[in-house]
Structure formats: structure tokens, C-alpha cells
Image (tube, rainbow, N blue to C red; front, side, top):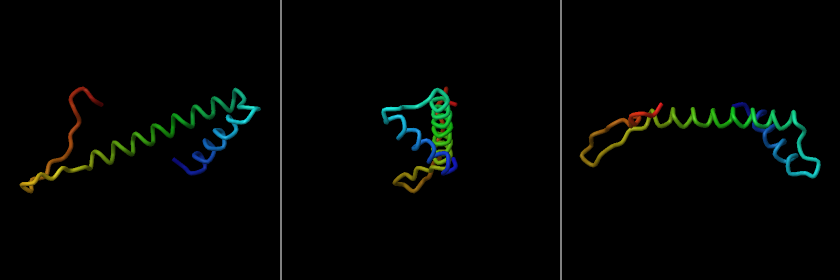
Length: 71
């Protein structure tokens, strides 16, 4: 996610805490940006876990695998 979008999320969060609050358009923009941020975070975490290897004391290495029923 681009830094400018993260900055916009923070800007909207600060404005939401002020007495004037957010307009309806700003609220929907904030929700869309937050959803995009969460999706990017999940994708990054999934990619990291897909490349994680467990090394056992006997020296064998095994990749993590997804559990059954998980996407």
C-alpha cells in the first residue's frame, strides 16, 4: 500500500476525533482505505508464512502448510 494512502487514513482518523467529525463521503473513503490496508496486511502476512520453514533439533526442515479448510 502506498504511503500516501496510509497518510490519508491517518489524516481522516485525526479529523474523526475533532468536534466537526467526518462527512459521509469521508467516512466511506476511510472505510475503503482501511479495507485496502487490511487486505494488503493479510496478503503480506500470508506471503511471509508461505516462505517460513521450521527446523527441528535433528536438522530436518519442513515448510509450514495450510490447515485443511483454510483458504
